[in-house]
Image (tube, rainbow, N blue to C red; front, side):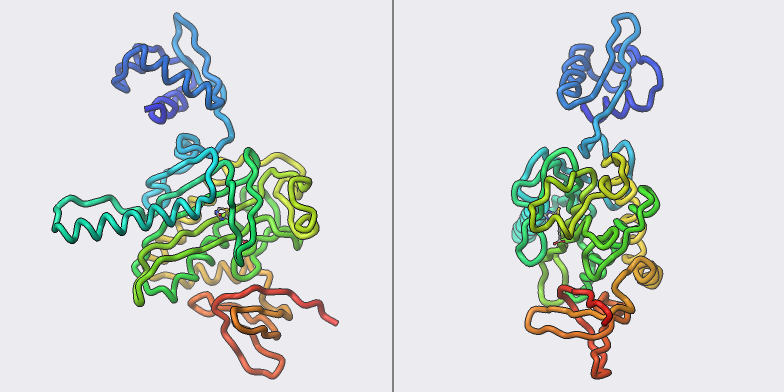
Length: 341
Ligand code: BTN
């Protein structure tokens, strides 16, 4: 109900009387007052004048469900939004939710219950801070409160596990194009999941999946983006290689608005993927990519190869022409761009 109240106040320019709110939302005057105080505690500035009613003066830049819903409404992405002030990791929460839904479905099937549980497709789990933010290869993801974006999108795409990497590419395209258009910084993608500005990392994507042999159960696409974090908050060993949008742009960036733009882009590309239209996404990826044409060393699970990056396959694998001339496709790995000698 606080969510409806904030939306109601947000859609009105001037004061709105308690009576009108009460009639429209079906809550008592005391109920309104209670909720106004809850919102105030969450950082909203709401003016209350006895003869006039209520007026919203300011909403905080915290990616709560209410704030996100005010800037973005999707058909698939963000149908459900779950916000945590602090959690261990939004990917952990997403994987738990996905598992829980599967066990409920399994039980329903056992008892042939008619009751249907809403799908989790498109659920966005956001946190203001993470206590155990995770990056790829078991690395930590620095996740202090009040400054960055940490969120995970739960998807249930009807395709085989080997095709899941397209979702990481989709996330990278969404984030990089949102940064370019909304912030005006020349962000680029480094295959498969790094978001760079000026050769330094500002964001990353951690895609985790639960699948059967031939079908994906669910995928958690976790996105971390350093938005307003000062470099001083980064550990010394990471500092030379990482940055934030604010550090690069030199001005504060509204987190909620940026998240709204990213979610809108995810919605656009995901709908295309579901319709089987991948070409435009792959073209966009190529446009935003910084890996192609460069000499690279790619470390994958069991080997290291070196050669020239020549783009990506339709399934998102990196195409590398080895120095011997042989062309290889790499499904997952870590890329180092080699300097030309
Ligand atoms: C990487 O570049 O190594 C991937 C970083 C991914 C970080 C995000 S923050 C939201 C989500 N929750 C996590 O614990 N990790 C991802």
